[in-house]
Amino acid sequence: MLEQEHSSEYLKKRFVASLMRGGKRSTAENIVKKALVLLKEQGLKPQTVFLEALNNSAPLLEVVGQKRGRSKILVPRPVTPKKRLGLALKWIVNGARTRTESSMSERLAYELLALSKGQGNAIRQKIALHQLAFKNRNNTYLKGKR
Image (cartoon, rainbow, N blue to C red; front, side, top):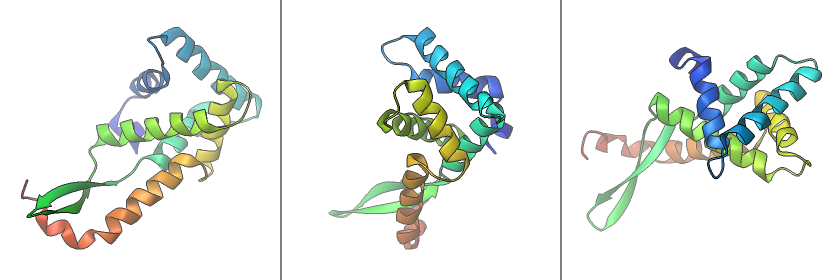
């Protein structure tokens, strides 16, 4: 789904940018290259694993708070494609950083592999967000009023 909305070069560029810390782009690019090589050594197609991980971890809905009197009402709404990609990338990188493997490239490779199989930190965050949107589905009548 995301590969239809964005080119693969754009996806890779955004992924490197979300992984980058302190402006060290070349370090982030090397981490991504090594992670994709690790996936290839396991006999997998890195491009398909990466795209499956992105599609599995990208949310469809978000919940936005709107003030109604003194209370704040949570209103579910669809996520734009650009924000879907941003949230998915952020969750993937955070999930990789919390893993316990020795190098970042290994952590990233195993996180992408887990996400492509339907497991991992980003999938848990996506499910939690969708459950919150489902619980507040009665508030969708407030969509037009901002």
